[in-house]
Image (tube, rainbow, N blue to C red; front, side):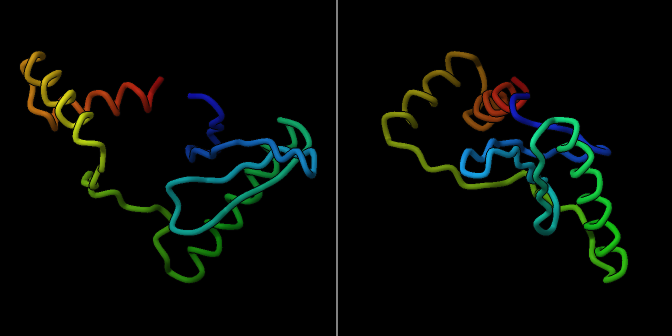
Length: 111
């Protein structure tokens, strides 16, 4: 996956902040914000480990579940033309629209 770093089993999206000339990591899937900065990949991993450990420690102290829970349901809004094209593609594949979209998202998310 592009621009994603896994630290202790948790994924963080990595971007570059040109104004400060540093990489920024932000953990996703946590019940709160945990970000970190460093000028290089080695430092970014180290800072990410520290940030994640501090976040998890604070959650433990407060009795907070650190990980977000995902229901598997969300609303998607697209144009009527895209909706029609997706319905046609799903039918042509012998799948429901839900199955077809779920597979398209799975493939895109793991590309």
